[in-house]
Image 1 (cartoon, rainbow, N blue to C red):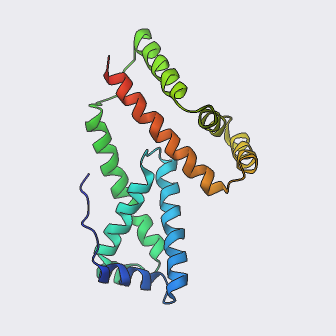
Image 2 (cartoon, rainbow, N blue to C red):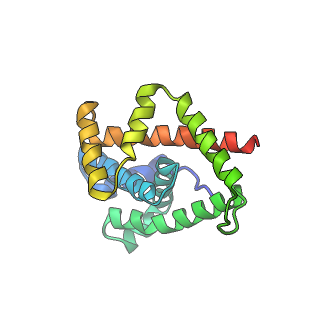
Length: 183
């Protein structure tokens, strides 16, 4: 994916000022927009949602003079960039996986994937493995309720739980890629 250059300090200051003229409120709004972007990318199944959210912020900041005249709301502006960044991410992932279109996998391939998943989950400490399994358990409302309950049990905020699960999922994904490439 084409990475945007880092914004200059002046561009970043303009971005924060666009969020709000009060520095403290601008920082709060920035964090709110950033976490919203992470949620959007995570809901689309992106493994590195945080890096993609950073990329959106960088692209907006680099073009701050132009986007301020085009958009009145910083959140809507950032959400406008999401689709382009997501499309680039999907193209890059397809290239990386050399994925052309879904194909039926043989029983042996499925068994190998299952074996690798078992190994990767087994390499995690028991508490992390339990968190990951419980985090993705259930369907729709049951999953939401289970995550709320899990956050209470672990004495974490919902966001802290989401970040922890995201990092564990990323770790397992990297382990799976490594394991499957060794065959």
